[in-house]
Length: 304
Ligand code: AMP
Ligand code: MG
Image (cartoon, rainbow, N blue to C red; front, side, top):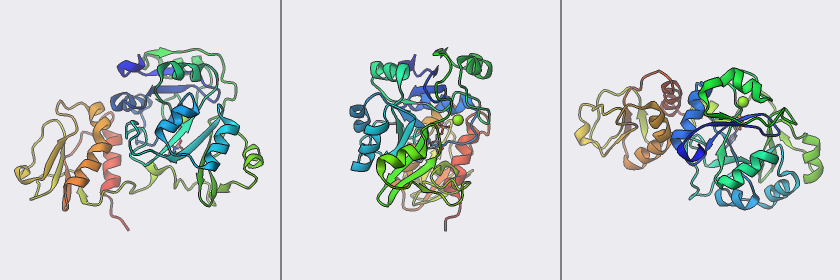
């Protein structure tokens, strides 16, 4: 099911996850669609071994110490993505970092067999409580997932603790199932905490303008100018499009799932293709269109 782009709900020690192959954009798009998330935020990638994690991200000594102390377990590390990593950019919401975790037990065995990372947020509709049993998942998501694997109640029942090891220290991005004190005992110093607990600086999907392209970006465009890059949808053609430097169609057939899978990569490509402007046609505000438009609005927002 995973290799065919399917979604499965799977038990982990933290909470039940809604898992898809993290290298497959349309599969990851289905996660957002199924959860009904109004925006694309970066997802945690689940892997089975340090060797596998090292295929995708860069480690420093501190990150390695944390990994050796707490993996497998309820610890997520945000680390620099390798430039050639085969993670679909929708998984990271276009960021150059990746949140990774090695779960214990069944989930780890499954990932080891599959030998590819699984993107998996909690298996609940956006805004609802994270599920800790297969019954919770079934009651909430029912028929919208191919398979719900029942591993009994989650042992920890809380989301993972998210850390970002940086030059100045280790930042606590989200408290979770692994206690901060246990982490501090291993690294021998205090975790850095955000002064304002509501500040979500590193949940970059929340920032007004993250991954802002270099070129100016116009949304709901009706026409294109000379040298512009055009991002279109469902074969729509803008006035003046023949003078554009490049035209990228998010989904020629008008499939919003395909459009979501292409969005981040196309923004980067369009940015590289024009010194002037990126023009984006209007995208329907239905289904995944809401999250696509949210992301486009942020990229087009005025920058300071
Ligand atoms: P959930 O999808 O509920 O498991 O939450 C995932 C959390 O991981 C969110 O708070 C994200 O903002 C955070 N996250 C995932 N990837 C990154 C990243 N590359 N940088 C910072 N935070 C991240
Ligand atoms: Mg969640």
